Image (cartoon, rainbow, N blue to C red; front, side, top):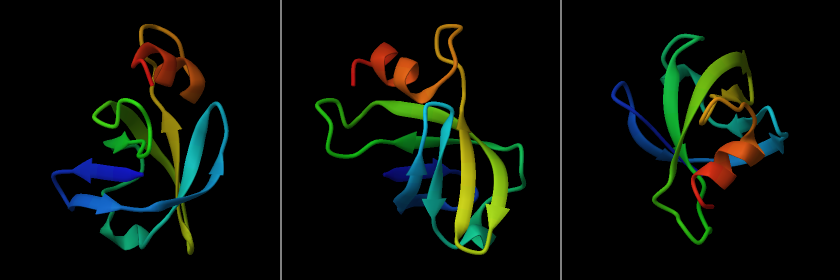
Length: 87
């Protein structure tokens, strides 16, 4: 996955856990803006790799950070957001 935000630019990271509500990314969390900030994420290896998800930072841990996938078209969850993006 790639993540994007004006505070750190672009970073390629790995996921630890993925659920319909969000995901946990393995990274140096000190590079991230404060909890509650919305960043963009790009799922790699899909038919539409240019599709971006809005993700809210919801927790920090030593190994990385947890993100909630923001609503797309009034629906929450990773699977519905990816469907709406055609991924």
